[in-house]
Length: 326
Image (tube, rainbow, N blue to C red):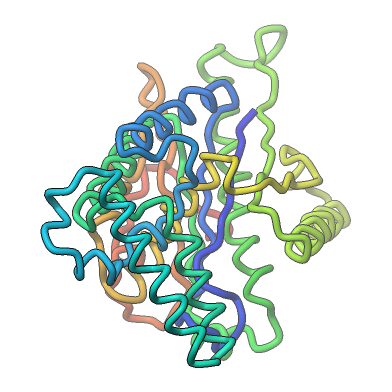
């Protein structure tokens, strides 16, 4: 069985506060989840973040308080925390006196989400993100999925559609194809059919917990399966019908999907590639001595023709692989 962890970057609302909406996923064999979890937790622990959630967007922000502390780089972690906390308390009281409730709430939100990382300099936080990206890139058993949707293009291309549901389909289809390819590899490896035929590979979708999205995605998967059955086939018969929704703060692989989604959105929106270039160290892998090709990166950018981003110009698909649904 493969576990496919999904997370969103940006907001689906139009216009919202982002030009793109990204749904990113990482699929791993179920027997590898403990290894993957331990690898990420070990890196986090070395930076004083054992047990903390990895939220890439909050991690990589610049913290104004740090620039106000003389010699911040030379302080130990405990003193850095004390100094930043002192300035933040003073800032909360200053903003409260202004009587602007919305600004005060936003400030508290920023401080709450960034608090685990305030003992690290901006350089150290970037190095942490790169180390985790390098670890994920070394997992030749993991597959990365991504749906990047340009909202302006989407309004023209699918005026009656919903960004959430389109993105979910753009990830679900290649995940189902991946399960088929793994079965093909094992079939060939086993020498054919009969008593030696391997057990079919199945998949479970695991999403960051959101009650509204949970119900929508569950119904969408059921509707897609029903339409296909009426047409005489079922592409998603390998995927467990009810997705699993979990707390991202307790699930490392959801946090990795967050890292992947953040890197994709920053690339398609701003051209940044310091993380996406690491994660995309190779677009496909070969299983066993038979050199059976399996795509490692399955990403699509729904935007205007002529886009020169990495997702659009990189077509390093393995020979003979047909990307149906992409």
